Image (cartoon, rainbow, N blue to C red):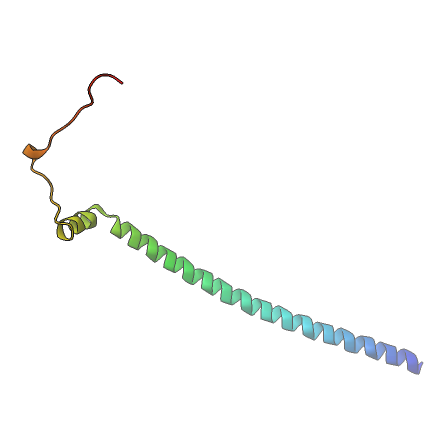
Amino acid sequence: MNRLCAILLTLVVVSAWSVVTSQHVSRRLYSDLQKEQKSAQQLEVEFGQLQLEQSTWGAHAVIEKAASTRLGMHTPDPRQIQVITPRGGA
């Protein structure tokens, strides 16, 4: 009977240790999951900001202003525009 009690006690201790270990691992993994979700959310916000910045830089008015100020370009006078058409049929 004494040997049976020792075996049962050992099984209870091993079982309790397994429960504690699995709960610890579970909590650690859940904490890691929350950190990764927060990181993913921050990346989504940054991606949205970059898309907004890209659309702003691609706006026609911004490109036209940069061309006129930095490159000294301007819209030609309509009398200066020549339309060239290809000769013959292709």
